[in-house]
Image (cartoon, rainbow, N blue to C red; front, side, top):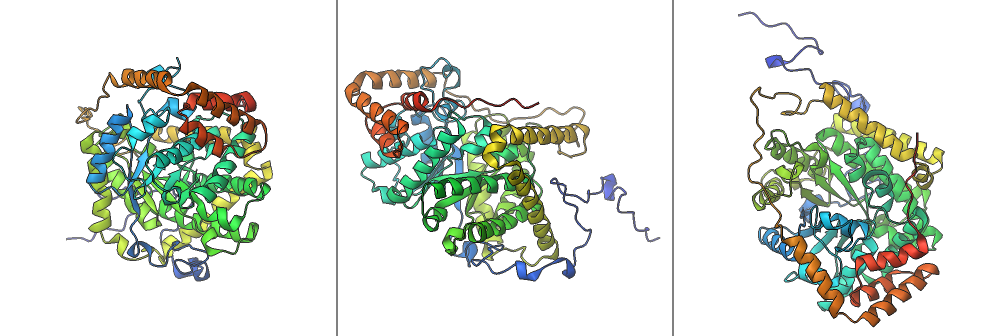
Length: 543
């Protein structure tokens, strides 16, 4: 028997497969072998201590497991409530509420633009009575609730406060997060309503109100997730998110807010994609950069205010409708990356989310993915398992440098708000999306089962098909119309008039939004009043 000669690094590997490229999806070139001289040990530090490279808590998940959530919501409040109860019974420890597009865009169910979208990508939630149904039988004092909502985030948060009042739950007992990050909506998702400046004002209003009224609730989750799914790389996702975070901090400082207090309740939100090493490095670098920004740029010495606390989604645009069961493996790898990266909250996409609302079966399987990793994999037993790895520390350093370089570009342009108003950031993400799609189409980026390893006779089996109840939208409209007929119309008019005066002036609008919700004013009515004073955002055209 002869010993085979070593193969060239660029040659196909065993079985005729391609060699692994030397760069990450963000374009960071890695050495084939990392060595001790590549690592700056002084920058690693200890978990729970500045610069928090290794995690925000000294004992990691040994002290407390991450919050296990599943993003869920569809059709009517009744249908979503049933799904929430099911997931909580299966061991979910927090709720993550998906809202339909009319609710996200400030449209009531009877609006002509809303009719075709009622309950399609989330639950319809036009007024307090619907939220009362949504959380029927759910103890808001014990469950952490996350809302993925931005343009109408302050209204939905006000509705949640009013719902707690109706259920006699003390406001200070409420825990959870509302996304409330409008800056990334202008560049990635499009559910903006108002211009940038009044939107920033309303976000600051909600943060200041929450700090006083619901001190355990996170009033903003600064989100890179949707920027990532829109096309940005892992490096750009973190850079844009941190830059947005800086813009919110500066807005709050202009309002005279105490950074020691408000910074302690800022949180972040990301997608996890498939390059496990790069994703872990992204989170380690993000923690380090944010801590230094809060301490060195804004002069905040409180360790609690320096913490970079984040939640993630495992899935998103990394999932495919081709060979959909492959998505189970993808979500598993991404969940491992989230755990190794030290996430505080995780929700895992179901394998069928690439093409439909998850079935009860697929939602349970996604939940079990987290539970198996939490309780069987052993990854949660020690803090920062990759810490001290030559390869990981080298990649973390390279990632930090790349993130800071993108942030410097944004600062040089004039900051996030100018970059958005001019369309500079939107154009950059669009270019990156085109590049990513082109690489997949050409086969340069391998997507197993989609552009590589497809059978000639392949038919993609979707398994169980979820179907919305076709009568659900009609019931939503009927309930809405019944509410309009039964509520105290004069109380609604008084509450809306007070909201309009607050919007025209300089008062914090949140107390008035809560009053409107208590009067059963609708999301569309509240948005209409604010539009009269603030106008609407006009998307820039950039050639």
